[in-house]
Amino acid sequence: MAILKFRIYLEEDDAVYRDIVIKHTQYFLDLHFAILKAFEFDTKHQATFYRSNDNWLKGREISFEKYDKAYRAEPLLMAETTIGSEIQDVNQKFIYEYDFAKGWTFLVALISVNKEENAKLTYPSVTRVEGIGPQQYGTKSLLGDKFADIEEKYDLNEAADGFGEEGEEAASEADGDDDGFGGEEQRDDFED
Image 1 (spheres, one colour):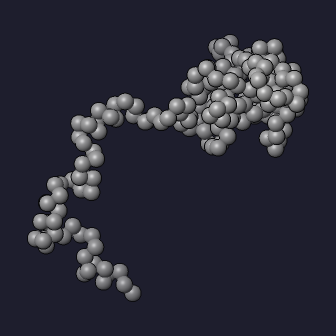
Image 2: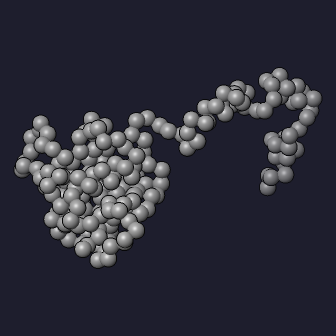
Image 3: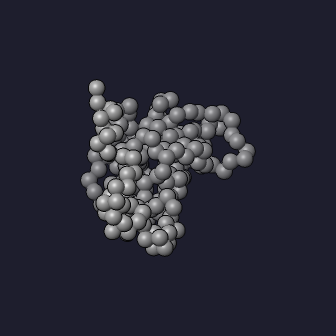
């Protein structure tokens, strides 16, 4: 049994990707759900794959369902189409579109074929995660909700220019208190 390894890139950023291994006998529907899970997206929206070439041009469509739009040819359905049936060369590529209103586009490239199955894995499986994935709805901080608590506790927006009160900085400059940056005597040292 062939195990296919796909690298799924975010269209705008090839430094953000997920590697997914899947059996050639599994369906595009399985790959669809694996991609959504790998990028932490929900499963509420429309989706479709396109067979592609090296120039990332859209070819035959493999759709979640038949949508109310014009098709050049009837789409294949993800639930009925095995991945192996659409692999035409060793560098096969697909374009995956999710949530047509938002226009999420992922580039799916076959990067390896292995004949041996890993008994420890349940296929499909994510084998590598690179970069911080996009947020499907808005933004999410690396620190999550805890950062808002820190910001409120320490009021990070207040006195953003320095650590002291506004009046303290002006008073220290008037007292001749030099912080070692930007004095005239130091600028002379750097001139030729």
